[in-house]
Length: 418
Image: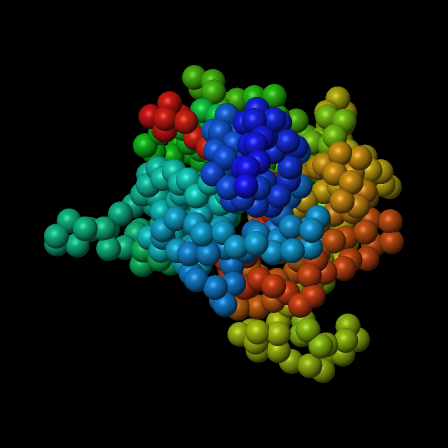
């Protein structure tokens, strides 16, 4: 029996380059020839650029090193095996450019690409301004001192002392990448406590650089070489992290007087900057009616839940340093959560719903304080102010909190590693 001729590698790569990640991974497992085309494509980074975000999560029913990847286009879940330490033992504090930022059981940070299983160790937590190592008699770090000051205020003169695994509960809020680490240089920015300050590191740095004196930052994005950072009262500041001396400029003055909603900033498909306000209802029991005030919940009750009730979108007007409420996103689609906030266009992602917001739970006090409780994950319709769940029943564990991830199959080159 004659053997069928193999499809040429260049044709395979051309076909594979337009596939979504789940299809691409499946294609790469068909045979050795297809695997070679898949590997070559990932090494050169010529895969489909407009990958649809997926939900990355863990599950108690799988191995501690495995993560689930839920495709909202296929409505199907896939299993990924990630490098040590086990993903279920880590906290996920960010998702950018196809990489997640994690804090391990020593509160040390890593970048992980869940698709390629590549991992990058970030500068030690002990190089963050407010963290000092405490050594035992053998010279081993056995706990951390956590110093309560910002660039403006000393909150307490007495430092707190935390075991290695507990510092991450108090220190990390959110993290952001400027670009894909597999392509070369990048900046990574941390929002961290006390009082949500900023620190950053460049690729290859061995320590974090603190950005005092401001605090109470809520979200960040990178645009045209600048870092944009939004505060809890709606201010937006810009920083050029590549400058010899990093200075702060004010793009937007405060847009509110008190902190009620969580605030995000994102660049829309037309290049304009948007500010998004997200409101939650008072946490209550899963089966509790909103009018039922008699039900008392213990704080450790696993039915104590958070719920997104309103999302409002504003366009930032840099010239006037003000914001203007917009009634509709049109065909734009938002992804909010512990990921870097995203705005995509439904014409380029036909499986997504225009004028909708795909969200995951990122309320710091709720998620960190109630690790066993159900997460607020869904799709919010901006036209009628209603939401629906992504999956029913919920497929993920409640901790670490699920995040949106744009799958990135690009592998790092040896030059990038060095």
